[in-house]
Image (cartoon, rainbow, N blue to C red):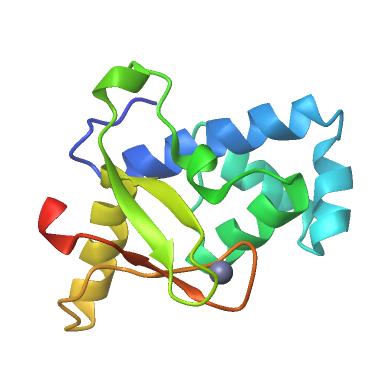
Amino acid sequence: MKFSKEDENYIYQIIGKNIKKYRKLRGWTQEQLAEKIDYSLSFISGIESAYHQTFSLGALWRISRVLGVDFYKLCEDENEGNTNTKYINYKCDLCGTETKMPIKVVKHFKNMYELTGNQNLPTFDCTNCDGKLKPTNPMDF
Ligand SMILES: [Zn+2]
């Protein structure tokens, strides 16, 4: 199944592929990943399947932690050369860690925020501390 880039299913498919890639790099089966993360096997296989399965930002966060992969890496689109990928700079409001988020990921979560009437750019949990990653220059968006 192929989704157009304007379809929000597209990002789920990209993330599913990346989870599979990083899981295999670790040499884990779907069962092993499911066990480590305390999710069902059907949830993990659903995420990785071509038909994909929607999942929460929190679930994605937990998977990135267990796989030991930077959050944004799970959102990288191999179909686009790295030079084409646009990023927004984020910075932790507590420890000052800086990171980059692909603009399409930010856009995706912004759309979800807007459903709840929130007009702000999304923030993300810091990987190093309990702080929040916030866009350093929201005007870049
Ligand atoms: Zn931090």
